[in-house]
Length: 273
Image 1 (tube, helix red, strand yellow):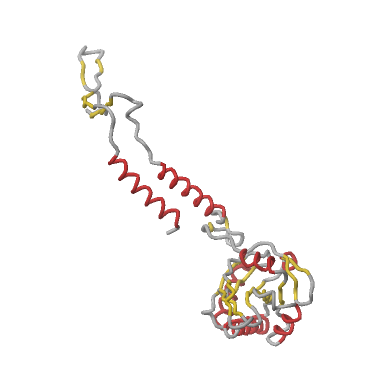
Image 2: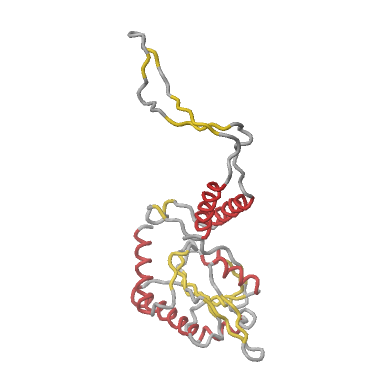
């Protein structure tokens, strides 16, 4: 359950409880009222249908009879409004899928514009990848275990799709450790796996911005001396030729499984294109 809904129900419960405890001002009396209508033909009064007898509670003074709303409840209301607005702003509205034509559910926005530097020391942005299917991975060259395994999987998947299915997907590696991963370091590292993998790095602020756009978690973990590791989510993204994220894959996929899943997505989108 989203946090703003949790707070909403909690605040609603507290408000109901507070209302029962609030005193009412002035004396009250119960009167019984009912309406009568006169019949034109029989010249007698009768109760109209649809207007049952009801109890009406009146108060001595309208001004003194108003309930007092505690300021803390107003604060809760403001917080709820802010959280709801923030969630709505960061969500994709329900609409027609560009491929299938079906309604798409509300989902977090993933992806966005970026400007980085490739392993050839050239400035590139998202426009340079338009027209290509892209398999995007965020990692770093000093990763001791998971990182290299994911790059190997990426290289094998690309080779499988191209050699066996004649489908080309552009592999892109974005470093989350730009301080150590220079263009030359990226080029040498990726060449060991597959020279087709495009390496991207650049200023720390630019890399951090792209990571935020793609909802990538990473954190610097200090080691002994000046050494450090980088914890990350190790997510891999399949991006369509319009630079829209189609699928996100975790480390639970091996090369064979990932190849099959990507092939399914490619076929589905090509059929509905």
